[in-house]
Length: 474
Image (cartoon, rainbow, N blue to C red):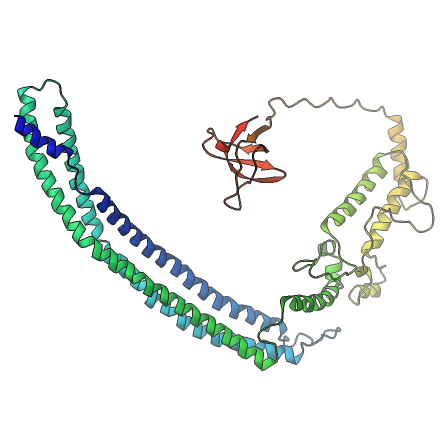
């Protein structure tokens, strides 16, 4: 009995194989499989991006061609003379479309090599190492069976008073444990012999794949630069291009003239676009100084001023201050009149029908005049507005004023603001994170039920996610 216990003790203390070496091999195998999966996924996205770039560039130039190329028969029967596109600009556009069409054909030929030299070899290598996962699974099952028998034997071994039945069960477990250890040893040894060469061959395949990616990328960029350089040489554009500040200044000088022409169009001047700034890019880098520029805030304030004048002139019996005279004077807070209100050849055609031309600035002035006159002097004849206003004032004086409405009830149960104070400093790890220093007070906008989570807060007007366990409640 004593010898059996010593033999069982040796089996009990012995672990199922060298776990450290086996764990390192399994980690290397998982890393190799993960690397191949990422190479396949990223290469497909790279291929789709180049295909989309080649198609979108050609489509963009085709749209330029349709925009600049004159429409046949469009000027027939029209009184307005259209300015044709300069021939040099047309030739440049046609030439650029031809270059991009040839470039797309060459690019698609090189893009097809991505599937052959990168994606397919990586997919085949991943497919070849997939059966090894079954061998790893069998070894894992053998290890679990060994550990299960070992746990049963340990449970019986630790009994203070073992019966004859326990001794028999312990002897049976010893036999089963020896068999399980032998089976696990065979599976473990097989994995140790077969897995290292596979892992080595797998990692040796990665550098050639990356070399193919670099080679194809270099060819694609070379085709692009060669086509654009040849086009610039033919039409006389500098290649390589001048510094960016010169490009920006040239663009701004040309863009300012184009913006003035666009904003002088009647369809733009009389529409909603007149209250917005036609800008493309940074106004600091490209100042134009046109008189028709308005910010959205100024247009909103001008509209709000007109709306307030209309309400006050009807509902109030006291006249607001105004200046008398034949011509109404605009309020100081109103926006200045833009220069696009001058009549164009499109708006002046209305005069042929005998109708007075009303410009946007005159509409606003008439609105102020009629409203102010009706509020100050109801007897002043202004078509039917004065009489109607006078009758409404008399009727309002005879009627009894209605009682004021009851005060609004206080909303009970309003959500109380929650603040926390930072115990540690935190630097943002992403664009949606909130950075803070130790001692900062953060307003909680959203929180979960536990502080071992990310909450949403606001600090100095900046909103973002922050770790709740870095803070404590105030």
